[in-house]
Image (cartoon, rainbow, N blue to C red; front, side, top):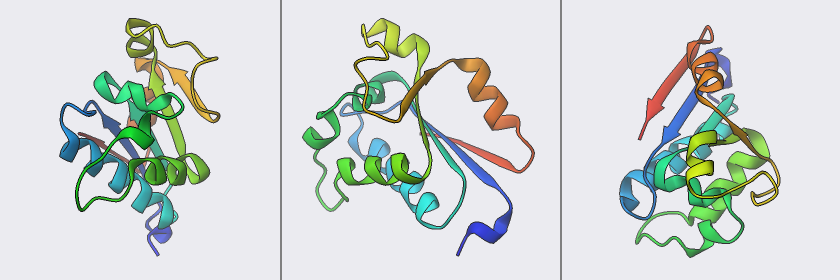
Length: 124
């Protein structure tokens, strides 16, 4: 188990259907960390912002990759999923539009999480 590491993981993904491999990697790493007991925060920014909406992750397909909808559900079940405030605003996405469990927050919260003692931040 990974949980004994005493660290947390903050993952920001800017990639969506426009860069499917990078997008899938971010979700895979986040879900793997959650499964290993690592406190995990996944940030949806840029084109990945669309995956905060119901049904969008189910539409994503990448050969030889775990279904994005399953990975997202795993992170929602055991970690934190955050939609970038500005990214949501640019796409006219409000709090009432997102999946249950997805929060909307801005850069200050990302910086706070990323700089927390023991945190490791990754950007995809």
